[in-house]
Length: 565
Image (cartoon, rainbow, N blue to C red; front, side, top):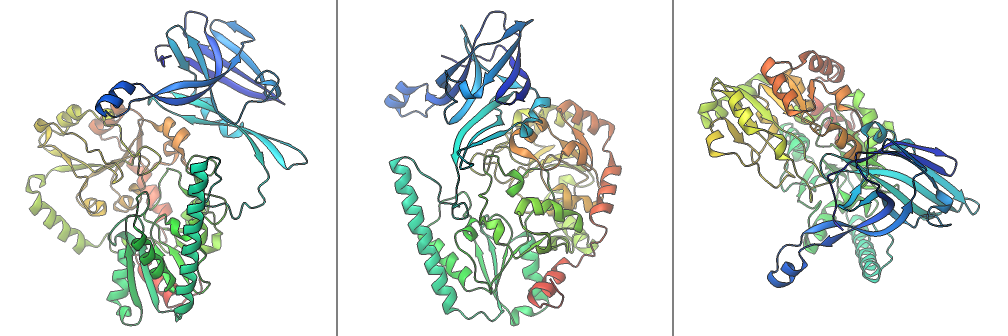
């Protein structure tokens, strides 16, 4: 049976009445469909080609299991349903798993979508039904996905759960129910135990005298951003003569790394008094650091909209409740006092652990000599950009992480951008480094539109940028200091907020014009309607206390202990 996209079945109402779940579905289908709750899987549709030619498998959504749904009534193609969750499948509850409402029609099956208005209410509709003196629970929650880029599809997450008295120990070693899964679980358990033993031995054999400092990143193979600025400032002050500085830079997150790489990293970590990290580093969830070692999260971003860390708790990819690497931080830097609350939610640690000293990489961001020096070097490399307006398009990725990161290039009309640029504007495209697929710029457009994905430092580009176009990325944060206009192009804003998740609405909080369609974006560009007053207010609210000496404050407060922290 094929997935039919020709007809719409949209859930417009969803509400509880004790154990009864009421919902309504509005349809444009002219006939009489059969409704089911369905479990879905993936099927290879080109099996013969795969077997004969070794072709790449083509996966299609396929129904694996169903439970009949009978509408109570239908008026003008509006179907009303009630599910008694205690008798959803005959006289039984729904089985464990993810279920979706599907309409079976002669043309195939249609998966029901939801309105965005209803989508924003789903977090409040989850139900937990306890039984067995509170030791057991039935959990029915709702989540959203978007397969076709246009419609929000609703999941019923039906799961029976049991009290977990070992929740503090359930971290990276997840439960396993198959033989291969159990073998892999045993392997992971053994590896982590060995890592812990190795760490404790090396740590115990290394005297902690307060003079060893490690700069560490698990996402890049070089030192950059806040880490680099703190490191450079230590050397400028001659403190590298007192402190022993070491470095660990590797692309470990989302990648396979060798045993030797792990041994070297754990060895470095175990010998330190202070460890500065700039991003997610799962290694710190595998063992507890010595009480004499301080772990400082300097974070790589300023302030964005997309949910990360515990602001995603309960969604796909959320951290475990106990001993996530985020829980290991002794201190965490923020750009301002206003951002402490944001990162309390992200890291799940107490307010007192935050140091709102500013972002170290911005200490000389507005240095006029530095700006002029960069501009001179840049225009020597790109002389055709001289005396032209420069627009920088720098959105974040779509997808859950590095492995499946993408951007929908069909949402950008390069022809219209090319015509808009004329002879006095250039359009630079710098995709998020997670997006592996490069944008294809037609040869005829390459004198006005340029792919800058490989340019090493986006912050430097701000010096020559006249207008930044972004979306949910945090890159607008530091750019805002220059008080130049930002436009937010959020073609999938509601889909992104309801599936990927944001901790604040970009529509309400974005310091610039927010455009939900490409047409709105082009209108804003042509009319120069940037709502610049928003970014001026944003700078005043978020950088009012920043004095340009974040590096020195970090060094003084953490390494030299000149002030109480």
